[in-house]
Image 1 (tube, rainbow, N blue to C red):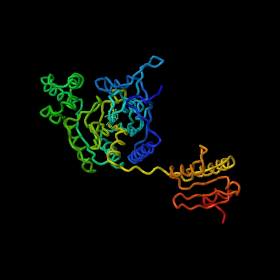
Image 2 (cartoon, rainbow, N blue to C red):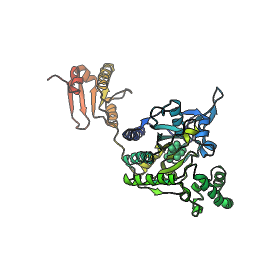
Image 3 (cartoon, rainbow, N blue to C red):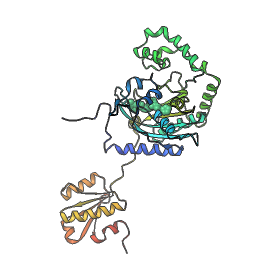
Image 4 (tube, helix red, strand yellow):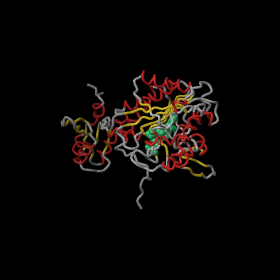
Length: 419
Ligand code: HAM
C-alpha cells in the first residue's frame, strides 16, 4: 500500500525549504523591527475556546474545525486560527496585568476542513500579529503596516489594501436591523450560502462571492456609525496616508469572523487566483472580555504563507541563492575514508559547509556529485594521494588543482598555516 499526504496538505521538500526559510527570516526580521515578540501556543486547544472566540455563527466553527474527543473525553480542536489562543495565553499567564499592552506575532500551522484549491489548504501556515491592550487607531495602522511592508520587503508588487469599518456594539445593531429589512425580500433570489448566512450573520451576506453584485443599493454602515467609530476610522485613514500605504475603501468587506469591531482589512494580490487574500484582520475590542478577561481592546491580522510563496512564484520574484557547499571530500578506500571523515569533521567544526562521500562511488562520480552540489572545492583522497601522504584540492570555479600534504591540509584551508 502506498501512502499519500492527506488531501489539502502538502510536504515542503528539501528543495523548497530554503524558500520557506527565506520568507520566515524576512517575517521575523520585520516583526522584530516593529517591536513584536514571538508567541508559540499549542497546536490544539479546548474546542470551546474557538466556539466562543471565533464565534459559533462562523463558517470556521460551523463547518471547518478538526474536532475530536481525546482519551480523557475532552473535546479538542486543531487550531483553525491564531487569535483566540493568543488571547487565552495572555490571560492565562496574566501578561496584561503589569503592562497592559502586548505585541505578539506567530508563525504557525492552522487547520481548516475546507475544499482544497490553489491557495486553500486544510493545513496552512499563518504569520499573524496581535496588539492587545491598545484602542488607539495607531495600533490598527501598526498591524496593517507590518503586514503590508513585510509583503513589500518580500518583493511582492500589485498589492491592494481593502479597508472597512464594522462599527461597534453601540452603532452596529441599528445597521444590522436596516440590512435585515433590505435583504429579507431578496432572499428567494439569493444563493443558498446567502440564505444560510442571513440567519447566522446577515452582515456576511454582503461578502458573498456569487451574489455580491446584487447589493449595490444596500444600506451602508457609514450612515449608522457613532461619532467615536467615525473618528477612529478617519484617523486610521489619515495615518495610512501619512505613511504612504495606499488603500481602497470597500464597504462590502465584512470578514468571516464574529469578533470584529471597527476596522476590518484585507491585503490582496493581483498575482493570485480566486483565493487572493494574502492576509486579513481587524479590531476585536470585545474578544478579551468574551474569553473571561477585563474589557481590553485588540487588533491584529493573519496571513497565509502558502499564498505568499504562490504569489512570489507567479510574479517571478528571485529567491536568494542556496548557500553553496564549501568542500566535498572525495575518497577511495578505507584509509582515505577515515582521513576524510577526520578532515570533514574538523572543517565542519570550524564552520565550513562540508560533505563527504557516503555512497562508495568512483572518484569521477564523486566529482560529478560535487559539481551537482555546486561545491567550491573538492578535496580528493584517492589511493595515490594516500600513498603520497597528500590531498588534491580541486578548485571547481578556477578548474586548477594543487597537492597539499595531509598534515597541513586543514590549517592551510583555514588560512592558519605557519609561514
Ligand atoms: P482569516 O482571514 O481567516 O483570519 O485568515 C487569515 C489569512 O490566512 C487569510 O487571509 C489567508 O491568507 C490565510 N488562510 C486562511 N485560510 C486558509 C486556507 N485554508 N489555506 C491557505 N491560507 C489560508 C484569521 O485567521 C484571523 N485570526 C486574523 C486576525 C488576527 N484577525 C485579528 N487578528
